Image (cartoon, rainbow, N blue to C red; front, top):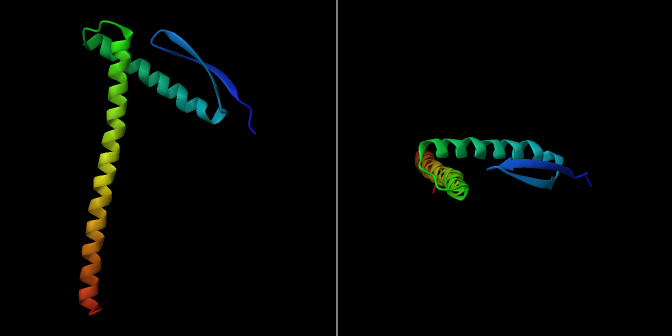
Length: 98
């Protein structure tokens, strides 16, 4: 069993102490940095009432990217499947296999 690592991440002017696997540290620090950058961008671009509004906008932005990536991958898989079926039919017809 690996040792746990205690870190502190700052998001929206709050510090969050976490106990994590060492392999998670880089990803969590990058995620916190991305949230901070996006929050600053929203604060500068829009009239924001409080940090909760900014964090909700950040959550929506990141969640929509994940959902869109899933949709794009699904469509890509479907297109590849259709092309493979068409190729299989073409090969089967040329070989005369029933």
